[in-house]
Length: 495
Image 1 (cartoon, one colour):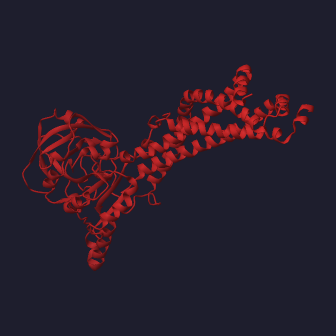
Image 2 (cartoon, helix red, strand yellow; image 1 turned 90 degrees about the vertical axis):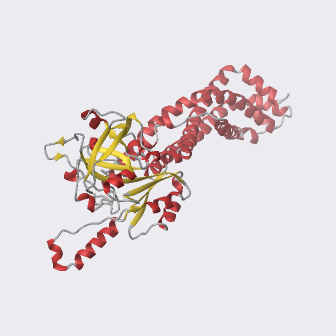
Image 3 (cartoon, helix red, strand yellow; image 1 turned 135 degrees about the vertical axis):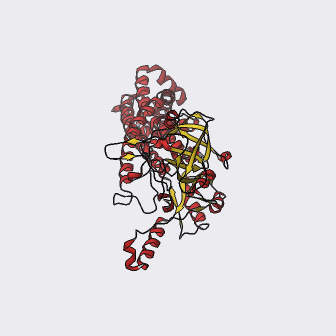
């Protein structure tokens, strides 16, 4: 008799046994499916979000060289240097260098920042009072901290940019446009500006109105700004130390207008370049360093968001792999024990078949075909339940991974140089035009959410699951059939 036909009849006639085997195999396949879905989703998430999280490269003044130059100048002045406070001068970034770097390959977008101060001529500014100080002034220096700007401060901070949408404050939704529009490259050479909602409410301003400001670094007449947008921020303060200002007093303009107010041309305080592929940051930095003067400027790369995402997804992948292999090994053992018990019950049947001249390979093949028939049903059921199990597991694992990586990130941000203070080339975090807005810390958990894990059952996933299922069954049947392969028909029938 054909062993495939015998396998089919055995599965149909032994309904109870077949049902129990389907349940056992379905549970095993569901956990393997969940592991495969989490692993594949984690790998896909890293690959598809490279462009979204990107990596930023910042071009700014070399603070270490500037401090070194200041100390050298002070020592050369001799004893008279103690009578005057040493002056730190930070060079401004040349626009031509920014333009040259922006033409390098692998760039998604770039932005520039010019920060200065101004006094309000036609509006009232927001003053924040506290028990320890009153913050009505601000730090006029931008991310590069120009000493000339700090000597004269106003009650408004003017931050000139190329595009507000690429600023971290707007990307991580610390600041959001509520009315009107954001600034972009088309606003260059215009007097367009966006203001904070509290400043707008205090002065009854709306989109389309104009305001007048007076520069603190030059003696030129007042500038008239046109409000094209209103934004709302969740920051608590801007600036450092006693020169903090309320974030409502920050006005965003084009960098050309900020340069005009600051009294300079062809320069910016810093420039930030966002790469389309974070893995190319080293080659981009190397190419950018060939354009700038390393004694005056520095190029620093930040791909912490991508690395956090990669680290989180790597942990998810490792966890999923452990699930797959542990369940596969345990499933092989469990099914082997079940099939061994099943074979013992069918020893007489096997002995009769062998005595009739049936080959041992066909008897083993019959067992394998029986299990494969049940496996097909189990795969269908696992395809339905595996996604739900994967979602439940991914939520638990992602919650644990996010908590761990967030704690590590907070520790590293608190002590970036190991001494509890910022590193030498790091710009003040309180500048809204810089790489990191005040009061904000990029959390690794923000890089990807559990909902971002697309647990999609694809043909590839089903093929992987089928391969695991077939391998498990093949090993289980082989282990259970060792007794059949080594015994003679007469011994089986007598036993």
